[in-house]
Length: 398
Image (cartoon, rainbow, N blue to C red; front, side):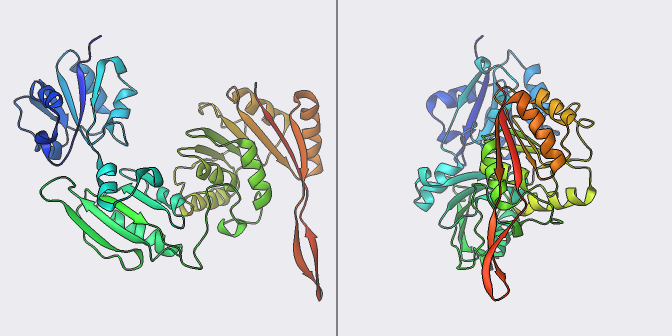
């Protein structure tokens, strides 16, 4: 089938900035879909459709115009944090032609003199702003598509609270157009009033007491709110490593408690997702607060126990069972797990360990015992204070 739908990236210079081929496509369009801002950048005699609300209605509008010459206007590169990817999941790619232009990230990098290979590109546009927290690192450069005029101030607050108040911030707006603007400042005293449509560049500068939050698992226990019953730092690092976080993968955290494993899983890989299953309301509150504070606000929390609450959940790529282990719980989870899925179970009681031995004998996998000792004072001298041993069983579904 010939492509009838053209998704065109456009900049602040409007139709004048398009290549001759792309400009001809726009000028020949029968239907043009886009925001009012984009529509104002062109002068073409065609039916105009503004983004619908809710946005999901866009797909039905496009399909209803199949066979016509339809152009969708987007900012810059339509496949980089933009509408092109959303449309491409719903309409056969053979029916679509993409026309990318230089986008906000490339323009911002050029304005800053930064190499795009050496920075992180993020978007919080229409998404929780807190998700950028996971990327705050010493000497890290960030380019962020924001969600409004208030976003830079919110991010300045996140930086300052974590000891990165000296970080240099630059807001760029209307890049490539006649009204291009730039605003510079530091996070700790940011008070600039900026346009609602902007791109934020950050050079992260850490103070001596800055919070160190690596993306690899093993955050210190004191970073998590909780009631003391949690998977501790060293055991958590091993557990998440065995779960193998991957881009976009889904974890079920069964008996998630304060959410420490789910949070570390989501931080460890771009777009990793997690569903925490926890029957206690107080622990779900801890988990929600931890997810927000540590930059993974999309953690989903479910009230209930396995297997009662599993119906209708998306099949996971990994499962962690940190509480409520039984043979029935395992078998239900194992049945739901995707091929090549990873399952990790931690046990600290003799009863749970007995269940693990039965399952290990039947299914194989790796069975290890983990015990961590910490240096502590014993009277006037120092010694090792051991924690409770953890029996860990892990296996891959093949």
